[in-house]
Image 1: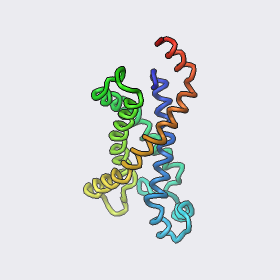
Image 2: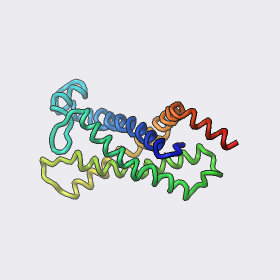
Image 3: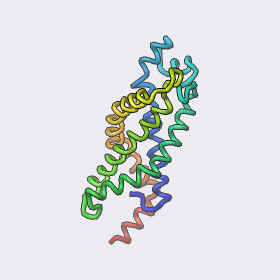
Length: 188
């Protein structure tokens, strides 16, 4: 869908902006929410996070906005450098974009992006959220990484395929409506 570098950067920005918020919510509320409430004795996840002084990252407690900002920076960098370019190239190895139905081709790109980004971001998260207070062990890091991939991959696959990417593509079409119409006229 994006045709030039600026459009690719906007598309990646929008995707990562929504995705990071979704993953932080998923991680804090769905995966760890019950544990956070049990440890602190609070009745809600947000109160539990505030009671413990934030979210554990880099071996200390950080506010949620800092966690989102840090994850956004890592995800945006990876999406621009690896996710988008590699997923398009890999999808092109299987499908010819000129002969394949656009929905099938876009689905292949989304699935490939999830297949690349989920393990990569989960590995970064394994480092960011590692329990450094207990000392460092490479096997613990790898186990945490595998656990994160197992939690995140199904969530990533379904949210990207059915919610996030369709929403981002709709927003993208609204933002670049004139350019898209101009391309359609030139193609005819």
